[in-house]
Length: 57
View (tube, one colour):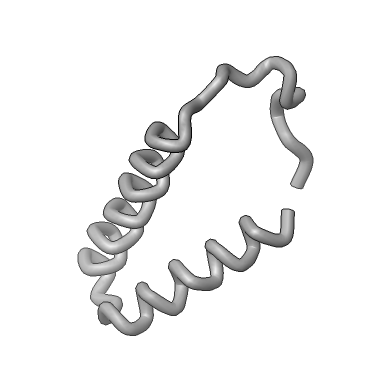
């Protein structure tokens, strides 16, 4: 998947901003996953996969 914006065009984000964004994403995944009937174990596995994919970029 290609990035939409060049890195130079992105705003500067602090580590705190990134941590909050990551937590919001995780919370959203679990909320929607629970609404879809997924277990915490399934959602945790999905979250780990997301983190692994993000780390390899």
